[in-house]
Length: 416
Image (cartoon, rainbow, N blue to C red; front, side, top):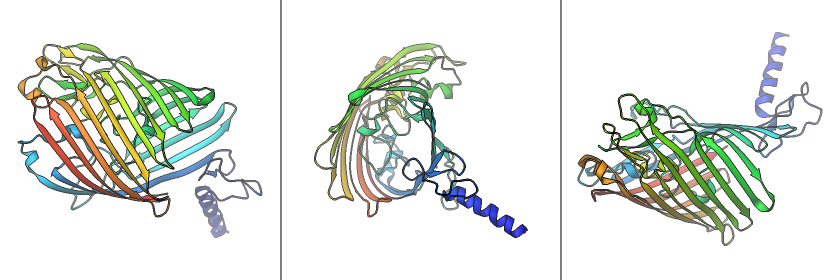
């Protein structure tokens, strides 16, 4: 009897995980989940889907080494010691992730939750010849009820439908960077007839920028406080030909931290983005944006260096909010139903206030960035992507110094 009881418990547990009907908790002929790939939790009206992928990339930097994902403002400047080291090879599986998606019907519409973690945690000091252990990282965690969304999700300013498919997931000059577009937020979306929609939200604040000596700073590393959330809005039109979106952001960036002079500047940005379906499954995608001290909302200009945020002298409190503008355009062509290529080009420029900076600061303040990439991706079955990509990027600082990146990257993605 004990063995039979244990077997029954094991069967129920397996049924729950696999989505198999359990006769003791489900009707005689239960249905599947309410959305593709999901199963109905026995005894409830909640549908659950477990998904994700296993991804490994192989990276070869022909010039100086960049990161596991591209940081254009981290490209070493010619003449530096880091720039003299060429030919770096790196393999990693850090983008691999797992997600849980649920949906439960209510009187107010579906209650949804979504959580996704990957392996891009901050501990990267493991010796690669002994262990390549990586910490997990919370990527997304949000819920929705009707038009209301709360949690950590893609920023309202980021238009992911206007970005091409890429082997390297980040580093697009001219788009909100993939590593910084996840924001804790509260959002409300109004859907109107004819494909129109409008959304407003408040997102987590973080003052950011570069000091007069060239060091990047944020509220967090200064030990300070942010008083008000960032405010964003977007209107969007979706049609059979594609979509177009107009986004806006405003924030009050205050520097209030121990041991430094206080400063405050308003920051704002606007963006026009969209995509156009051309022939078959082909699509043209674009983004143009501009703003005042936009920081991580606008571009990868300041992902590592702090450029295009505030320019700040912590001793005197002198502060400047530079204007920055960017553009990105990409095109995807499908050679067959399983084979496609994308090409992309991006440009970004930052108007620095040179009087604030020391000589060292000027040598680290990004003035201009360009980027281009081309790839070929094949899906022999829908659950597998095999791809190769070439990426070129160039960084120019205020003193005129520059550095180049030439990267070849391959990927193998297995989805579940």
